[in-house]
Image (cartoon, rainbow, N blue to C red):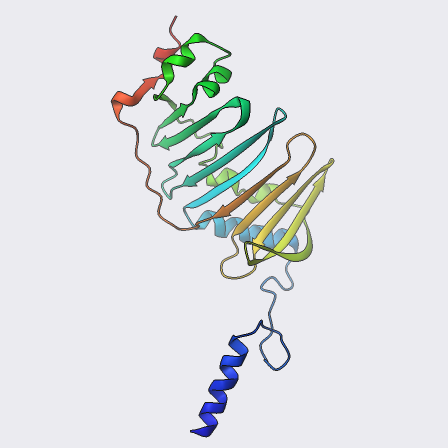
Length: 231
């Protein structure tokens, strides 16, 4: 019994401190040991797409303005979220099946419609357009496509929200992109940072595999873009 108590005490002591402290035999092992940066990126791409659903949020620059995004993508491919900020206004986006719906504030519609007086008629309404599926925010295949993740270099590991991450970088034509891949659990992408004068930005990825419910707006709250654009 005394021996068991000693073992238990030692186990608790090791659990109470970070791995690698003198006195504990456990050591952190690199899950990507021996892999090239490109191979790590391939694993991250497969894992992130394979999760089905996820959330992406962050901000970047567009036409010298800061634009914030926050989207949740469902396993079905549908998604919902918000985009915008600043003088360009803010809008909600919802993609359900073969339709895409956008509901923006007056500032958003004024900019989107080139200052048209019709912008004021859209308050509180969703504008419906076809979902072309052309690599938008809901397209996980486009977002996590591995063919773009080539000629990467692995840098010193870091952390994203307390999670250990492998750091992969790509520097091409004055544009540096840094990918953070989870080094614990499944190798999901955790963060992507783009460092360039034209369109810098930082995006965070989370909530992998969590259910996302997307419901199309009520018909009475929807205006069809074709009808809206009639003279």
